[in-house]
Structures are given as C-alpha cells and as structure tokens.
Length: 534
Ligand SMILES: *[C@@H]1O[C@H](CO)[C@@H](O)[C@H](O)[C@H]1NC(C)=O
Ligand SMILES: *[C@@H]1O[C@H](CO)[C@@H](O)[C@H](O)[C@H]1NC(C)=O
Ligand SMILES: *[C@@H]1O[C@H](CO)[C@@H](O)[C@H](O)[C@H]1NC(C)=O
Ligand SMILES: *[C@@H]1O[C@H](CO)[C@@H](O)[C@H](O)[C@H]1NC(C)=O
Image (cartoon, rainbow, N blue to C red; front, side, top):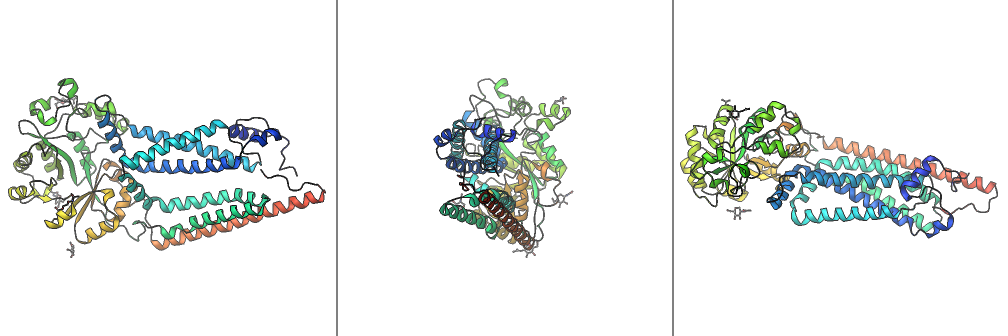
C-alpha cells in the first residue's frame, strides 16, 4: 500500500497540483518543508470561498433593485456618461470571483483526496486577497450608501432559507468524507479532537437551523394573487412613461397605471419621472444647452418636439430590447412624451385605474389643481383615480370627492381614516401586512420585480404590487413555492436523518480502511507505519 507516498504521477495528480500550486513536478522533501502553513492557506481559501458565495447571493437578491444602483450611478455621473448598466458589471465580477474561488477549493479537495501536499501558489494568494478587497468594498458600499438593501437580503432568506439549508446538508455530507479522512489519519489526539468538535458543531447548526426558519410561504393555502400595477407602464418592454409602455401593461392585465406627472410651463400636465428630460428624451439634440433645465420649464409645444423612445433602444436599460420585434422597436423609436389627458383616455378605454406622483410639486404650488382639472375634464370614473400626492389633500377632497386616497404614511392614513397604503416592499414585514389586511386596508408594495419577491409578498397577503415586470407575473397561478409547515418539518427531518446515516457510513468506511492499512503495514513489519500526514 503506497497511498501516502505517491511514486508515480497520474495526469489527474499533475493537473491538480499544477493548478493549485503551479508546480507540475513533484517537489522534494526540502522544498516542501520550506512551505509554511499549507493548512492555514487551505482554511483561508475556504473562508474566502464562503465569502464569495455570500457576495454572489447578495448580488443575486439585489437584482430586484438593480435600477436603483444604475439610477444612482447615472445621477452621479450624469454630465459625463450616459446610462450604463453598472449593476450587471457588479454581478459579472461577483460571478467571476465565486467561480474562481470555488474551483480552487475544489482542486484543494482533490489534492487532499489524492494525498498530495497542499501548497497554494503565491499568485493564487494575491488573487484571494484581491477578492477579499473587492467584496469588502462592495459590502462597505451597501452598508454606507444603500443600507435598506440589507433588509432585502434578510427578507430574501424567507424565500430561500429552506433551500439553502437543504443545500447545506448536501454539501456537508459530501465534505464529511474529507473531514473523516483527516480525523482518521491524524496522529495527534488534540487535533483530531478539535476537528471533530468543530465538525459536530457546524453540522448541528446546519441540521437544526430549520427550527429558526420562518417564512410566510409555510402555509396551507396561499391568499389571493396580488393585483399588478405597472410602474411607468411596462418599462422593460417599452420606453417608460410613454403610451406604448402603458398599452403594453394593459396586455398584462394591470389593475392600475403608475406614473409621474409634471406640469409644463403653460399648464399642461404631462408624464415624466426625472426633473430634467436628458435621460429619457433627445433634448440634448433638440434644445442644445437647455438639456439640464427642468422639464417643467418647457412649454407643451416644445415638449412635443422631443423623442421619448430612442434612448430606450439605444441604452437598453433592462437588457430586454433584444426580445422586442422589429415592429415594436420601430414603434418604440417613435414615442413622444404623453400628456396626462392621453393617459386618462387610455385608462378609461381599458378600465384601468391610475396612481401617480406629482414631481416638482414643491416648486409649483398649483400643479395639483392642473392635474385635478385635467382628470375632471376627462370624465373618467372617480373611483379609478388613486390620489397619492400628500400635499393639498383636503383641497383635492373638496374638488373631487370621489377619488380614492392612497397614503405612504400609516399614521397619516389612520388619522384621516384612509384604507389604502402604498409602501416600499422592504419597509413592512409579513406580520404587518396581515394585520393591515385584516383591517380591510389595501396594501400596495412598490419595487417588486423578481418572481421570488412577488411570491413572498403573495404569501404575505399583499393586495397589489407596483412592478417593472408585469409580463413576468401575469401568468403566475401560484407562488413559486409554498408548503404546509408540517410537510416542511417532515422533509427537513428526513433529509437530516438520511445525511446523518450516510455520514456514519462514510466514517466507518474510512475507519475500516485505515485499520486495514495499518495491519497490512504491521504485517510487513515496516518501521514507519505512521507516515506524516499531509
Ligand atoms: C410616428 O409617429 C407619428 C405621429 O405620432 C406618425 O405620424 C408616424 O406615422 C409614426 N411613424 C411610424 C414609423 O410609426
Ligand atoms: C372596471 O373594473 C372594475 C374593478 O376593477 C369593475 O368592478 C367594473 O365592472 C369594470 N367595468 C367594466 C365596464 O368592465
Ligand atoms: C407620518 O405622519 C405623521 C402624522 O402626520 C407624522 O408625524 C410623521 O412624521 C410622518 N412620518 C413620516 C415618516 O413622514
Ligand atoms: C372586512 O371586509 C369583510 C368583507 O368585505 C367584512 O366581512 C369584515 O367585517 C371587514 N372587516 C373589518 C375589520 O372591517
């Protein structure tokens, strides 16, 4: 039995060694002794790999809010660069890091299995250090500039924790074989004991964490599906806040259009989100020098000259333009800024409600009355208007008593006996949502773009969500997953038990193997039965 002292090199060995330590030939004993602390580097590699996996997870969960990142970068760099999907860059970097670290870890485990020495090449050490730096930068960025995203990551655990736990059990079972090999071959009782205790503690934590897992989707029957509200229409399928965008959202059966209203210099309410029109129109070309002026400083006749769709095809803000047909692209390129009156006509025709914010309100005190006049003139049913702007609410109630009033502030809603709440999805938990719904209050949650989040809020009982991605949710008939708490209990307990049994088996196998080797060596009367463990 020569397994502890490989004499002949197989391709696999050479490859593994080459990638991990950048030495293609076996090293002499002296060279090996020079290498300091190979096990420490293995530990560091494991920790960095876990860190990259964590970072990848954070990035994937933040995809729902990618527009916030891109918008932030755009507004900071506005005068120099046009819209770039920075978030995609972050995700690609994270994917590269996680692939690199996990592959390296895999090769390290092969090295262990092949009983080769673990010598990490310095270039890998440098890369690992870089990975830690990049991730630390990312985590610091979120913590200082985007704190609420941690709430989203926390929330996401309610959707993913059961699966992460199952994945953890599988990974643990696979890794246990390596750990047992180490333990069985370890010479010193102390290190054997430490490894074993650490392993048992980690295993117990992974096996028992379902006791701490709560999820609104652990239920017998999900509540009614939340209605959809198209955020600026369907901005993934057409340029935001254009008639094309709202028409596309009608095809998703949205309950309401969400939009942003501003009033032109000559008193015409029109639809635009940003204070200026540089992102979503060709104003820089048509009115050179005025591109950073407020959109509300233009007359309606001037605004009509702007193209509000070419930017969408050019910058592809959601990476979705390739899914559009040629005809759709041509229509998108030919969009102009719509007036509120045009949207009201569409809302009336399609029996869709309307919810909007007034932009620039602080500056133009009479915007609300222009908006209300336009709505009254359109003859739309008042019940279809969800009035969100919080200033001048009393005047609006007097002028148009039939509007439904929507609040962003729960205290204010309770004061005015409202029954419609509009909140960002990560500012309220499922318990609050259930309480509000029990009081017959409609709860709309905005910023919901990914199916996992939609499912979670569906389980929590939200009455509607505002989304960029109505086309993704339109055909969902139930949440991605839900199951009764008892069923989940049975699943995790049986998986845990199966894993424990498998581990016991692996341990006994390793033990037997070792015993057999030892007696074989004794029988051959070798003097050094205990070769140094690598
Ligand atoms: C573009 O829009 C204008 C008016 O909105 C219309 O007259 C013209 O036919 C449209 N062109 C295309 C290619 O759709
Ligand atoms: C319009 O929608 C409301 C509820 O969304 C519904 O009660 C009403 O019957 C609809 N009207 C028509 C004409 O479809
Ligand atoms: C909500 O409204 C109450 C009552 O008007 C006010 O005191 C409070 O500051 C508001 N909260 C926020 C976050 O605006
Ligand atoms: C909520 O509405 C339902 C039916 O629409 C009614 O039965 C229930 O009493 C209401 N609950 C409250 C707290 O008003």
